Image (cartoon, rainbow, N blue to C red):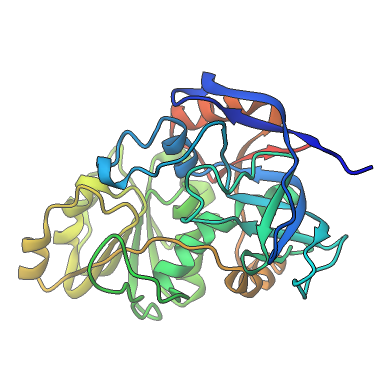
Length: 339
């Protein structure tokens, strides 16, 4: 007899980590074009805690609308349980990973923080076999962000962050600074830039230095002791994984004709200075792509790109995972394991 319910972390209102409730929820249906995945691990990303509190940091017109209760979570790794009749390429028992319905499922329609989730087949890829489910779940959103910013956008959807299409810049032989290099997007951006032949300078606090050098950083700047924009000069690209209003401080570190990629461009107000200095400022909205995850899987398999896990919590302790995120200074990714 088919199961009618599953365990999931749901919220019935916006707020802090205390609004997250581990409870029974309806099983997702297998819709046309979708695959039902039994989740083994999921990870947290900034949109999860932004949505949890109602995207209060976004302008009102950008805040997604939807209904409660909602289930957070885009990044999952698990095993195919069932496949819709119109889906080919996946079968029950396949081990898979995905970033589910982002950004279109931003209001809880991704539903990855649960025992089961329905995933559009186009968002899904076979899981790298040489890493475990926790590591695979830590990759999708952060790694796709780094890849789509630095290597290949991979889609033609309109850019909600700027009027023009984001275009990556050449990396081989260039000097790239990654600010916030120890975080989810940061530690992948460092590795992708290095993989593509760049000389990489990592900016983070001292406790992350050994890890970042191990991941390939050529130089390291401890921002708690040295102001990066006071010592860096003539770089080709700054990837600001912190972003926001402060991203403009890096303009003076970039040579004319270079680029600044703030992962979070909201609040950036230095466009006139960038134009005067002939520096291209560009960002993109990461989007789900099973095709790109399939392309990235061999790089995760052979260790060319590594997933760093900051901490791991059982799904039932999702509140604790969100509390860990709120404390900041995360090294890599926060993961939820699903029983």
